Length: 166
Image (tube, rainbow, N blue to C red):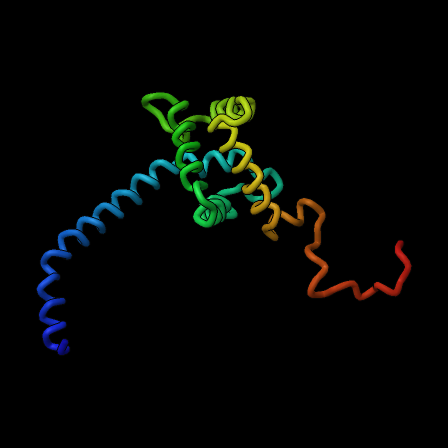
């Protein structure tokens, strides 16, 4: 097939493909907006778990972004985040979101989540996000000073390795 014939066939298909691609782009944007709304409870939830009394809170360190980035690499984790945040928003009441609640109400819902039966959605969400959020939080250098941790020994190493321990 000649190049001109190939281009003629290819350009003839554009009107048929274009509406589908526009529809897909609109659908993607709508899906992104829905996911953003469905994950609206994530930041206040993580801030309630890791309020940062002597250190920054979870959102100041971008823990929610680390958690979402990690979730994108694990099958079904994004869905767990979405369903768990949906559960928190649903428990907030018909006219409110989890983010609209005060600190005491947020803590009550998180405690309810923590005490729920093994294997339930809310318990799986709580266990998984708590474990991952704490890992990301305490791996951040801005939390180390409050823990009395000067940082990893490398790359500086142990220059006094020949001295006996004190």
